[in-house]
Amino acid sequence: MTELQRTGIDGLDRLVGGIPRGSGNRLMDFIFSPAHNISRFRIREAGGKLRRELRIEKMEGAAHSLDWLPFEITSKGIVLQV
Image (cartoon, rainbow, N blue to C red; front, side, top):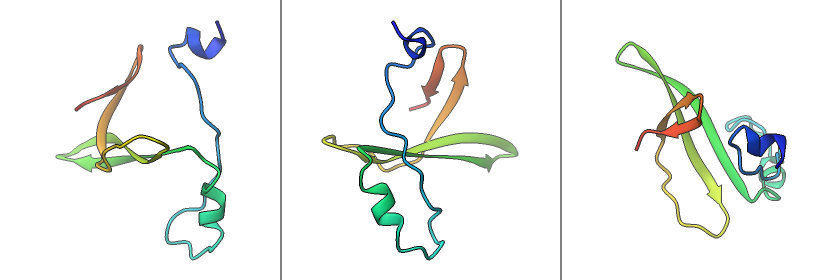
């Protein structure tokens, strides 16, 4: 068992750097193309509270929602609020 598995993380895909959208950099498509899975995270204020959200941008070989999904970070890991 790896250290990641002991902490509840089953595995990691390739970590690929990116350039923020709207930066005008044409290399962005090239940088993201080798990634099998891409997730975006943000913190948004809603109703006077900060809310963590994630969206799956790309999940190779799987149909998935493009909606922003609220989540919490707990002692058991990331818990989606769906």
